[in-house]
Image (cartoon, rainbow, N blue to C red; front, side, top):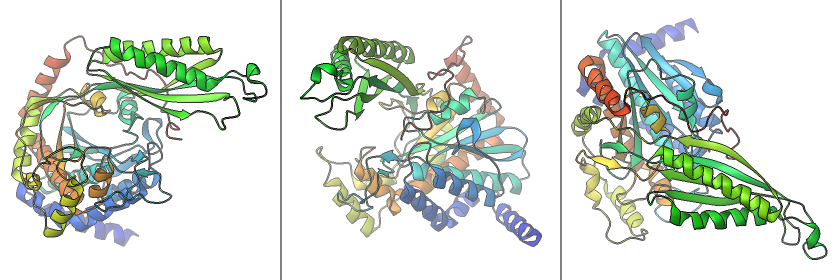
Length: 474
């Protein structure tokens, strides 16, 4: 065992010694394409949903341990969350990694709708790529620090349950970012861009109604339908849509509605999301949902309970850091399809409902940097309000693909997804190198951050003091 440890340390030394320049880093990451694509494909196959990503988390931890990182698992009360780091002082650069899948979108890696029998989830948001690219970047940065004898800490955050579980919020709330100088992240998409901007804050939770069971034909008068409570609440919330700010999004699914039509349901449950660009609006609209639930329970003679399962801030964009990342994305460049990939992508585009699709050649282009307002939510938002944060997106999906679709699952399990993943790994690594090399960039990021948060800002999560909702997907 001692011999193997020494051999591994020697191999790490040799690898690190070759990574002194940005071009060395790019070449080194390229040599690991087969390894990283195989790792991503395993996590794609696992397709584990929020807080149940046992195999996915373990594989990423193993990858980082073998590369010489120290790993702390089960942080912030989340069994699948972990922190891996190579530490040699300041500055501290954090890199975020996700790995949870979405329920209901199991799909084979083929260009037509083809579900996988017996499988309940799929990586329709590409988090299998997210975690692996970020880990690859962290490893490359660690090797660069060693090769150049630089001080600094590169820290990988293994963050579970981004899809509705708000995993990063618990890490923020418990102070795991308090010593970090800058945080880097990325996300799969259908374009290559390092643009910056905002996203939608959200709050999520389950409304549970309790009634009285009875025979729906012989003795309906003795029953009190929990499903009536759910439907009454849903009706009131649907009327509420006319009287909220127009940017608001309210979604729900009835997760339990009873077991049989001839039994008055004693229990029913509805799962809600509320989104708005302003988190104060989210808070007030959520309070109105809770009042609707109480009113529905009163009107149907049932009892209602609510469990808040998640809540995230809007994203705080930092333009100065986005420019640094944009420069590195341009250095890395895009990629072109092989003939087989082009055929796959063309077939995928034929399944889109909208009109003309973007050109397949757009995967080789870098979208101009700009300020955006993303009509989606992410728990990266909370991180961005406690430390300067910057991200990018790369074309891991066929141009024109919508997130959370079977088309995204399909492409993410092929070389199309892996090529975009490698672009992200390189860009993250090069951006971290710039930050380690130039303290001025970090200082500028903090100056802009403080000007946007203001002197009186104090972080308070939207989930209060609740513990992680480890069973929210069960």
